[in-house]
Length: 517
Ligand code: GAP
Image (cartoon, rainbow, N blue to C red; front, side, top):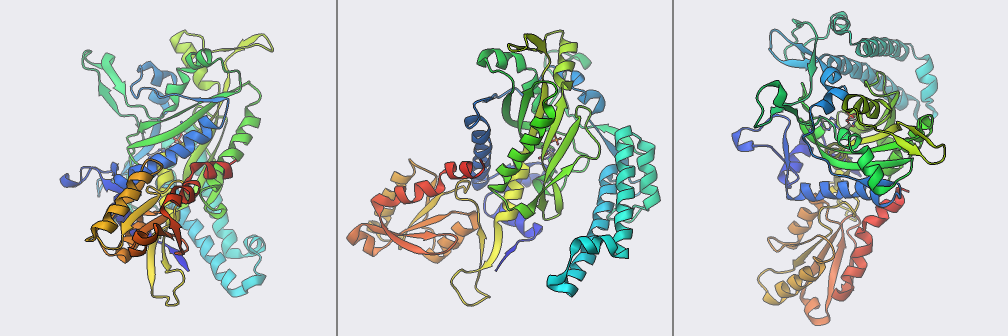
C-alpha cells in the first residue's frame, strides 16, 4: 500500500533530488524565494508545456504572447492595482511579527473544519458501511454547532473584506480571541491596508515620475496588447490570448514552501467574449479547466470553491482547489472580469480598446473570462500527489519499501535512464552510451553508471523516471536490453533498435493532452 509523504519530508526530498533549492542558501536563504534545480526545471517546463499546448496548440481561437515584465506605470493605475491591490496587515506588538488579518481568521476557520472532519471520521469508524455522512452532518449536535460557528465567521470575514472594513477585521480577531500562533500573544496593532506591488526606479528619471512596478499579474500584458493581437491575427470573438511569465507580490506572510512566494510564475489566459455571453463562457472554462487537472490528478484531490469576496474587477470567480498537505487551497482561479480592464485602459490611455463585430456591425469593449494558474503551485500539487512511500511491488515483506515519484510519464523530468550492468566493462559502457546518444535525440534521457544497478533503480524511482534500460552481458551477444517499468517493476527484454518505438509513445505528451479533452 502506498502512503503520501508528509510535507517536511516532501521539501527535503525536493532538495535532495535536485528539484527545488532555497534561494541564496549560502547566505542563509531569502524568505519565499526558491530556485529550481536540474530535475525541477525539467518537470516545471513539462508542466508549462502541458498548459501551453492544451491552450494554444489545441485551440484555433487562442494565441500566445510573451509581454515584458515592466509596463508603463499608468497600467497599474488603470487596472486598479495601485489603489486596491492590498492585503489587510496586522502586527503583533510583542513578537513584532506580521500577519495577514484575513489569513489568521481563515486559519481559525480551518481549525473548526478540522473539528467537523474529526467528528465525521469518528462516526464513520463507528458505523462502518452504514454511515450516511449527509444525515450525520444534518443531525449531529456537535457538527451542527461547529458548522454554525464556521458559517458565522465566514460571513463576517466576507463582509469585512468586501467592504474594506479594517476595524471590522480587527473586531473579528478580538471576538474570536485569536492569538499569535507561535507565542500566544493577543497584543495586536490595528489592521491596515498593505499594497502588494514591488516598485523599482527607472535609471534616467528621478522621483515618482520614474517609479516602475514589477507586474503582480501577467494578465495586464495581455489586456494592453488586445488590439495589437486582434488586428495582427484577425481573430474574431470569442478568442483568447495566453501567456506564461513571472509575477511578483510583496506577500506579507509567505510560507508553505513554493505555495506562496514573492516571485512566482503564472500561466494566464484571457478569453474575450461578447458582452452578455460571459456567464456561459465562465461555465465552459470551469469545466474545461477541471478536466485538464483531472488528467493529472484524481477527482478527490480537487474541488471548486466559489469566492466569498470578489476582486475589484470580477462579477464571478471560483477557485479550483487542490488538497495540499496543509488542506484544500487555491491552485487556479477562474474569473469573469467583465469589461473592467479593457474599459479602464481605454479611459486612461485615450486609445480605443474595442472590437468591431462584423455580424452586428457594432463596436464594443469585449468582456473577459480569465483562467489563471500558478506554475509553482501546480508543481507543488504534482509533487504532493506523486511522491509516495510504498511496499516494493511484487515483494511479500511489508517492510521492504521504496520512495517513488509516480509522475505521469509525459511530465517526468527524465523519460529513461540507461545504465551498464558493470561500469568497469568497456563493452557494456560503450553499448549503453551508444543507446543513450541515440535516444537523447528523441526525448530526455540520462546515462548513469555511478552505483550498483539496485541503487541506480532507486535513484531513478525517486525522481520519477518511468523507464530504466540496463545493458548486460547478454546484450553484447544478442543486442537486446532490459527495460524496467517504474510502477510495476516488470522487466521486458527488447532489441535496442526497438527502444524508441516502445518508450516514445508511452512518454508522449499527446496522451496526456488527449485525456484532458
Ligand atoms: N490574474 C488573476 C490573478 O492573478 P490570483 O488568484 O491572484 O489571480 C492566480 O492568482 C494564481 O496565481 C493563483 O491561483 C495561484 O496559483 C498563483 N499565485 C498567486 N499568488 C501566488 C504566490 N504568492 N505564490 C505562488 N503562486 C501564486
